[in-house]
Length: 338
Image (cartoon, helix red, strand yellow):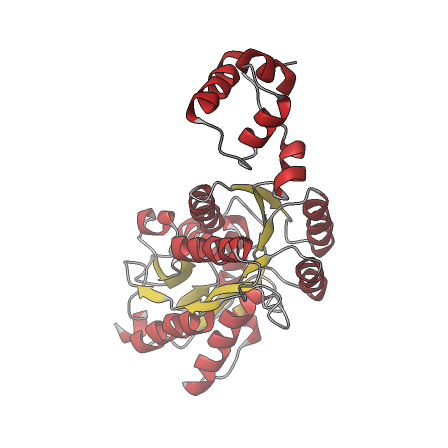
């Protein structure tokens, strides 16, 4: 295996000179730097990350904790974060928690053992998740969260006004004349669904419409979960005229379920999703949804964290972005109002 001694011998310099050069702790004369670079190319030498960490106190890694990489929304977040971290010479190390608090807390410990420069995390949150991130921050690992609120400015915070987005979805359906509106969600106790459920409930109350618990279905936050939950709604004697889904994958599953029951969308059933993932505009019919600025969320989370990596005295930053309604072909007036 090629090592630093081979590079030093070929370049005609000391190992200390090579070490300082590859770790960026010195600027040798141009001719010396050229000899070292040529020796590195010829030998194929790759500097040890462990040795680099000892010198620079940095691994060049940011840990990204997320519950699911199959959701296009999360994938776009990761893509944006990786792009902006890369511009600062950092790499994104992604770990999947599957929404399990115990796995999340263990992964936080594992990332800290690997001495990552910082951690970015997404929901769902729980008391255990919040505590693990807070402990990491107080122990000196900078933390940024997307949609998870930490106490005492323990980390940077980036989010969207998902409650406001939920209100936009409900006002759209109510404005079209819908009164029997189903809500398909994950666990309303989690932050990923709680604000949208609150928007659903309070929007109905403001419209003078009572909450029908049979119109609220919980399940996995994916296409299969949306399919199964929608079928449960279709088994009611009084079919809903609209469905508000907590994310686009659930909404796309509901569209599939409607097709399996020969329920026409939007003529017999309107559907609104949340997130505006790329598939939303390509579904049949194209999905009306609430858009979150995914790339901007990822960019800000990375940039906020990088700011504190560069300046240890910098205070955590916080921002909440707006959502917007994207009206497409999956919504119209209910049959009795058309």
